[in-house]
Each structure stands twice: as C-alpha cells, then as structure tokens.
Length: 248
Image (tube, rainbow, N blue to C red; front, side, top):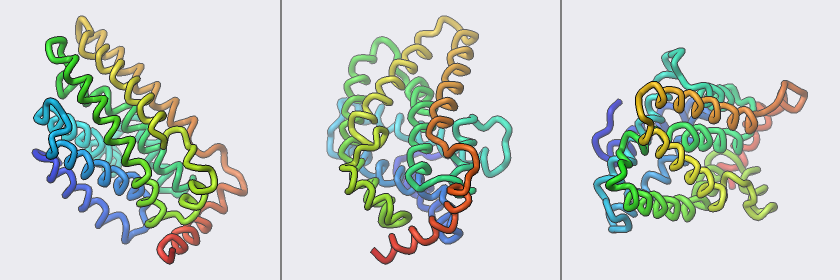
C-alpha cells in the first residue's frame, strides 16, 4: 500500500483495525494509537503549526509507509523484516506480554528504527536543515500532548489495567511521557543527520545496520522475558482485562 495523502494513511489504518480488532489481534493496539497521533498531526498541519507544511505532510506519509511496509512484510513472512518489528509484532500477536508492552514495543520500533529513515527520505539536506529541525521539534509538541489521549484510547479498547496503572503511577512510564518521546525523537534526528551526511552508500549501509541493531536491542529490553507461569497466565488475563475495558 502506497499512501499519497495523510487521509489515505488514516484510511489504511482504519482498514487494518477493521480486520484485526474483530479477530482479537493485538497488532491493533499500536495501530489504533498511531491512528490517533496521525489525526492529531494532520490537524496540526492544517492549522498552520509548522513552517513547512508540505515537508511535514511528506514526512508523515513516508513515516507511516515504513510501518505499513513492516506490517506487510510480517504478514507475508518476509525474511527482510527488521528484527525490532518482528519482535514487536510477535509479542502482540502471540499475546506474550501486556498491552502496555504491545504499545511501547511498537513505539520503540517505529521511532528508533523507522523515524531516522523517514527523516532521511523526506529530506533534511543542509540547506533546509534548521527549519526542518524546528518543525521536527514542533512535532514533538504534537506527540507530547497526544500521549494522554493515546493511553486513554488504548485503555478504553484493550486494557482496563493500563488505565488503572496509569492513574496509580501518575503516568510515569518513560517511553509514554513527553520527556521520553522527545529524547527518542532527538536521537532519531541525530541518526537521520548521520544518514544524510554519509559520504557514500557504503557508509550509509553501515549506519543502517547499526540502526537496526540499536532498535532491536531496545525492543529486546522492553519485551517480556523468558517463559514463566506469569507468561502462561497472560493470554487469559488479557481477555478478562479487555472485557473490563469495554465495560468501563
């Protein structure tokens, strides 16, 4: 699937959700979260929050395409799928972790692995870099103000426990805070600059390899650990948790 507009991106996310949610497929957790953020980004672009709305639109589409390509590769069993996405999708589809892990694994793979590549593809050449960095930072603001809505959306559809724990801890999960998002996206920008400034494709390929390994290491840290009694209890507990979420 190749989107040409942000609305087409949103429409494709709707199609994925329409397929996954009736099946109880927890790939939907990240997709639903991503859809909410995309709608908010579209609103920010349309309201003039960015210096270069055309560039931000292009970036948003390219960024989403990285995710869509990963989904397609996963569902087709493509061996070229990045390991970070393989882990994130496996954990979600096999219900081996919590709903919070489904969300954070997807966010980690998309921001750490996909965002530097999307920024490079969208163009951060030296002549436009300062303005595009400013727009990138405004994007941080948009994401930061969306995190509460993302957690509420996930809680209401998939996990009563997530909403309860968020209220109990005051929303302290690092990756799901404004600070955590900014830190991850700042590192993504730095890696994108390295890709853009690489002297040749060989160096760029090495950087891409390092990026893939970094993203995999991050998702491995966030993923559920070795099988245990708790791990075997997670699938039935998740069904109960989701039922409570819908009732709540």
